[in-house]
Length: 185
Length: 183
Image (cartoon, rainbow over all chains, first blue to last red; front, side, top):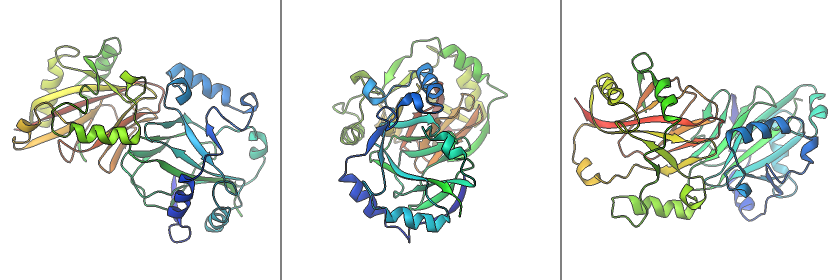
């Protein structure tokens, strides 16, 4: 990933997190998807890989689980507007993912039922933002590297919207991370 | 952490890993509970309970397999490693974390903690003995190691450094752990 900058002076991430701690997530992944799994491009292949490796969701007695929060629902949409201006891109999708201690977002790419629609959008860019103060045991990894101990508000651009990645939490506190993609302005 | 070098040319780690893949581990960690009278254990256990970790033995995924020299792998591995890092071994083991499992944030509180704390020039090292795999990570204090070359050796800041390991990949993750006295 390519370091882009820091949003710590633009967005009060501590306040965003404090609000999320008082909210229920919109849904949890990977099971309680808002889409029919059969309509999600790549989902079958991903599920086969997980099954072969013995990966289980929390509901199945495993650790594969993350909570999803959305702008305009669990956090203020102004956060996304400010982020758009910072990265100079329009938002196609944005969310905050939470991984509780002991759980992980197992190795995956962000499959979607809108894959064909997203692929048709030119100049698509994808970013993530480490919105927490650094915590032991919080790690985000991609095909290129692992990221821990990041400064709160730091933003990275992904080489591709569909990059494989994983997030994990062997620490003592909840791990929150902001995700964003859309066309560059 | 300090990078020491690579043991890939002096130890056939792939053979070791292949051998362990068919063995029953010495035990599944953690071996101790918060009630054991060991320095540091109750503090670590309390933190895990507060965070909500669920151990493998309780139906969760917080846990790791432990393999030991003589019982599970050849002592010559340890001797070769000890010569390479120029350290007399006190203890060593290989840990395995299965996909979807993790070692929660902890330090290696030990049965002989009081004795170890008096030994001078103690050094702690780990060696990434699996081939590099996506989803395999170890975090020690404020650094994480990822996609390490097979055989790469790192010296830890301290024998008692806090650390954690997670496997969100598709294959088991093996790590050789070692501490001893600098020669």
